[in-house]
Length: 348
Image 1 (spheres, rainbow, N blue to C red):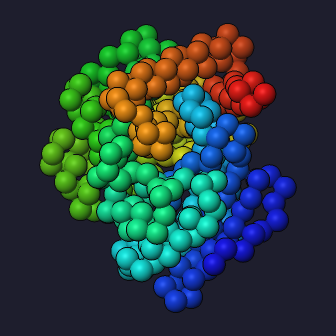
Image 2 (cartoon, rainbow, N blue to C red):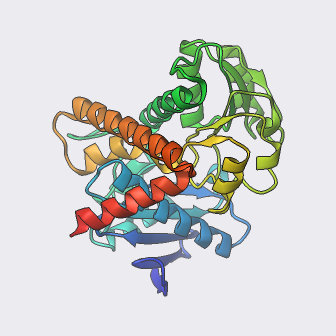
């Protein structure tokens, strides 16, 4: 089921294949220097196996940085299943994926991500104990989306303080790209504090529901980054901040839940040149893995522990933005240096 692929950038990369269930995908372990690799399992359509491999490599590296930035004793890993979850996802396929995870003997812990649900995690758990994001059990953490959204909201307040002089988001216009679990919860939090919402998603029904519930203004998926707004929140797939879209942005602050928002590292400099404050994605969206980590680490008093970790993550973002301002550098570069130093220090 697992075929190891040579890699010069990751500790281990595996191709997954199970002809009986139609399972095709990859597991990538970027680093286990701080602990077992942890990161979600996503299922989506890819143009090719190479595209899926490139995605899992980027995502797993991002998890190393995300877990380190959140102060968790976990390394970075990720898994992807190739295929439309609405069509190809079956209990048999999920259980096969569970067996693939179990074959790694705890070097990788998986959890919910795009195209997955707590119910899906329960199917994997029938074959492996190395799965989190469950709805039931002594340390079950459930859907991590609300906590991810809370972390993004906290980061957005920190960014607003630096950009607008106040953490108050009342009256601010926020353009949200992607209305999955995290995007929807972020809309709810922003609506509750009086922000104005402009929203887009490939699913028209999600847009209609968000417009009705939160009084949001709809936008076309390929136009949302162009709308006039104070804050742009990428909450869908990665790579949406690139050489084509960044020149078209009309927001002065970018803070969202998507992973790997920058198509290229150099795109951080393009944002900086346009005086657009970019909040590093793996710091802003670290709430979800904090919630999952409480389950992996079997934390007894999870609520105060998660709250404390979220506050620490907020403080980390504050330090990164302050240092970036002092150095006149992009927060993305400062965040990478900060986490690299932390990994080296903690791994000694």
